[in-house]
Length: 248
Ligand SMILES: O=C(O)[C@H](O)[C@@H](O)[C@H](O)[C@H](O)COP(=O)(O)O
Image 1: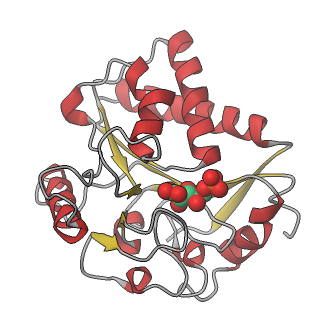
Image 2 (image 1 turned 90 degrees about the horizontal axis):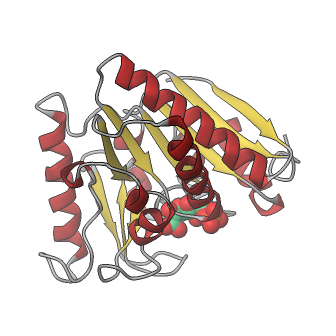
């Protein structure tokens, strides 16, 4: 597990820009090395802003996508194309504009999909898709970069303080039925899945996130502050703007 490092920027715009640049670099480097690149996307304001910035850089850098697989850290369990789905927002921000093979985009199931509104079955289905991509090397592929937004309550993905999914250590994916942040039903990667990532990038912007950032860096009680439990095997970066950094 890596010790978290802080990457500071003046504001949300500069933060999203730099995340995008760094991500594009990583994707280009993997392509040059002929490596598959597994990227985990996040919902939330700054996560989607970063994808918008990637789209702008992708156009000018001529970046290839045929070696990239896109996964999600969590999803709001809503019908396909619902505007509140993280997938819908990521498609509008980036995915619809890039030439990535459709079978390499791995959205979490929607509530009108093959499992209907059965979030538990949908979570199991996603865990199977991850296991297939891992090709026997574990329950999930080794993610190259896992992007995570963080809530003011220190949640990451859909792992919320005080809810049991934070402590899930067997399943790679878990359903959430009573999320304090709407909508109540969600699907989420669990901490062991997130922590197989080579690099975990926590993105935080705004004063409301300052305490969560402080707790995340301090690495305290995961049940109370799930962000304290995310660590990449090689690197853990907390990307913060000045407001989010105000307590560190
Ligand atoms: O579905 C979601 O809501 C998320 O994936 C969630 O984990 C999000 O990333 C944080 O809540 C931060 O969201 P904001 O950046 O919008 O505050």
